[in-house]
Amino acid sequence: MDAERLFPLISRIPLLSTPVRAHEAEDDIEASLNAWALRGQLVSAGPAYDRFQAHRFGFLASHTFPDAKADDVVLWAQWLAWLVVLEDSHEDGKSDVGKRTLSGVLAGRRDRKGLSPIDKALRELWTATAPRSGPAWRRRFVGKLDLHQAACANEAANRRRGRLLSPSEYVVLRRGTFGAYLFDLIEAVLRTEVPARMLATSTWRTLYEGSIDVSAWFADIASFAPDQAAEDTHNMVYVAAKAFGMPPTAAIDWVGERIIERCAQMRAAVLTLPGLFDRCGYDRPTATYLSRVACTLLTLPRAYFEWLLTSARYTERDPNVTIPRQANADTTTLRRAGAGHEATAGRAVATRR
Amino acid sequence: MNDLQMRKIDRAFEQMDTDGSGFLDRDDVQALAARLIVGFGETPSSVKGRAVLDSFGGIWNTLVDAMDVNKDGMLSPAEFRDGMAGSFIDGPQYDAVFRPAAEAVVSLCDTDGDGVLRRDEFAMFQAAFGTSTEDVDVAFAALDTDHNDALDVDELLVAMRQYYTAADPRLAGNLLYGQV
Image (cartoon, rainbow over all chains, first blue to last red; front, side, top):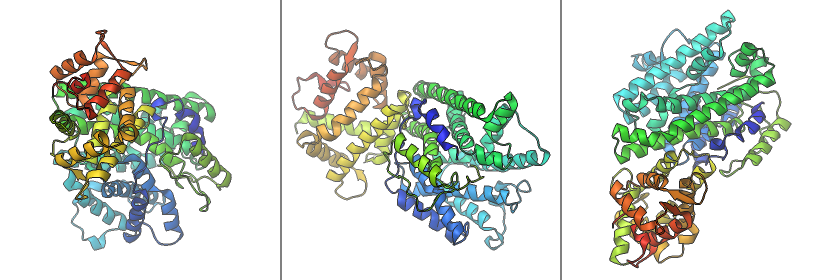
């Protein structure tokens, strides 16, 4: 578990220095998500279910949307859990990644009886999500679903060929494999929609892509050791080490500097938002709700960091270890929790998000 | 509550009703906080941003606990007026609940931490509350008593208390958001 390496890094980023709040219904959100996954056979009862619960997808959703309606937070958590189950099916070799598009699944006429639990869940989630937004958002979101599939297929092809990406190639691919649509889903959770004009600005792209990049690079640092053990080259640390001939510790520092740089770009972008709202002629409700989406994009990297320290996705932990769940846990407390994981953990889990 | 206080509280309702629905809910209050945080380039996980979110949440919880008579998670203008009066004007909760929010907002606005707000910082604060340019000018002129083109943060905190609680029409704080 390399998440410990993130502590000195995050302390250097004032915008991410304070723990984000948890949703007051976090326990209910987690319970609802876990029951849904079991009911839909995304996970089977027994040890697999225990492990699914220990991933704590609801924790990440709760910390990303501490003020949203609980049902809406559950929806985001369901998409996150579905994504991870889908990715795990890729790694298990059970999926037909690259042979079909998810938009095809959504548009398909196959009877539900003929669908896998993953595809059934996809249709169910889409039925719950689509009515919340307009046609432009729906097209964008479905396009991002297909982007994720295509990126995963590219990654699989790179593995087969032993192809090593350059840092700039990796950054683009990683946005795809990380599940960018979860970041578009913020709008549906908050029941708003970013206008096309705003989406096209460099300011919004910086916020949106920056949120993905920082979260993904946090994950890469946290999962570097297991990725390396699995000889998976799709990790920013590995890519940097190879590109610049650096040892892993120096490469981790290099990725850390990129994270700091990206956060600075996000801050510069957010400072231009009020002026951009004025130039676009947005009324107060629009500007205010766009601010909420922007705030959530700014929240996600810190929420992700906290999830890295909590989720069994990144540590295989003793189920008896108690993880602090209070909203106000400060960084010191979280560090102790992380150290606790280190003390009680077995081998790190070779999976990444 | 006199007529001036009613007008000020009704204006506060309009400021907080960010989606213009005619009712206040938690989303409105958090959206206002988000607008402030974004305006000053902070984040929900920065010290200043988190303080604003926490304190706004405290105000909302206090109002709902006191006044959401039908328990629908929303406040009508009448419920808001009664809640503000019962909790913060006549009641004891201004210092415990409202003042921390005022301090968090002022700290957010004082970007360089020098204890004063420049005109552009004050205008950014007002933009989040939907104040017109004309009213921003009226407010700044009323509060900048020493005419040094800056507002002392302590004086601003006094003005906030006057706006949200005082009945005396002679106080400068009544003009915090322009003419009422």
